[in-house]
Amino acid sequence: MSFRLAFLAALSAATAMPLAPATAQQPVQLDPSTCVTPPFYSGPAPFKSVEQLPDQRVTFRICAPDAKEVLLTSTDIAKIIPMGFPPGTPQGLTMAKDKTGLWTVTTPQPVPADTSRFAFRVDGVKTPDPLGKTFSEELKGINSTFEVIGPEGAFQTWDAKVAHGTVSTVEYWSNSLGIKRRAHVYTPPGYTKDARKYPVLYLVHGAGDSDDSWTSVGHANLILDNLIASGKAVPMIVVMPDGHTPLREGVMTLDNPDFGNELIKDLIPYVDANYRTDARPATRAMAGLSMGGSHTLRNGLTHPDLFRWIGVFSMGLGVGPDKGRVDEYAKTYDAALKQSARDLRLLYFAMGKDDFLYGTVAPTRALFDRYHIAYHYNETGGGHEWPNWRRYLADFAPRLFR
Image (cartoon, rainbow, N blue to C red; front, side, top):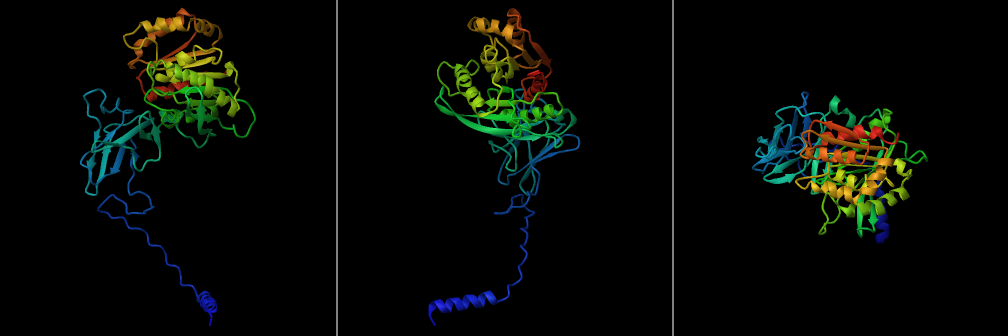
């Protein structure tokens, strides 16, 4: 018999044989003596890394059997539970290790309903939550995030009952800087289904953050979703630029002409060319927090030909001992400020009483008064922190494009 005939005969016999019953896959058994899961284990973790307790205290866990010391760190809740703030306090909450290698700590007091960033410090090394699903990119590195759910934070919480917009990450070429740039863009519910043009808010982050921050920890998209659903805000596109540019001599973080050039010459034209924008100054706004507030003072308030709605959060003029910079600012932008006094629809200025920049409020308001620029001032408690910035956005956005 030829090889071919023999092969075909064997194959025919094999296919004629009854199939053996399939055996059920045995579940992987977790070793109760350790929190480490076996290789290729695809089931749920044997513990929750972040767990909100009924009284709004929060428990954190991380599996690190070989670690000698693990701390929980979070600058966002350091004002509530001292962790390096004020200076001299411990750099984090000390976590306790059990016999399986699981480290655990529960906050000693409730955490307000809000969104916060955190990380673990494992033997001195910053470690985002290995089981985390939400992260926030900053200027340097990333943190994990967690949200404590409660009525006072509902304005920035995802709600299944409302329609939700879309956040896109876009990359574009900047001729001004000669590099690829990135921005996050929020489009409101309904944008993909209609053909209308939308007003645009350019919303800038602070010095320690990135273009990711206003959504990942600021929840700007959820704040807008909830405001639009309740009829409190006009549906709008929100563009969140990268507020940092490559370092070069003579360009400061707060007074950065490179950012302004890139915004005006590259980003705004890109957005108008790729999104259905109402590209009139009367339907374009700019706002920012901290460094983003400085960018707004220098590139938004001074460009009434582009922006008629301005928001400045936790930033003023005359930072530090150099009070003369207020007069320098006025001299540089004199004509534009006079034009803004005539053309602006809104100038919104917000600051917390405990903010380290609170001393800039008086000289900044005096400048507005000198140029007869009408403004809305919102003074709150708290300091230079995300709980304030989310609430400033929630107060500012409903005032736009009315």
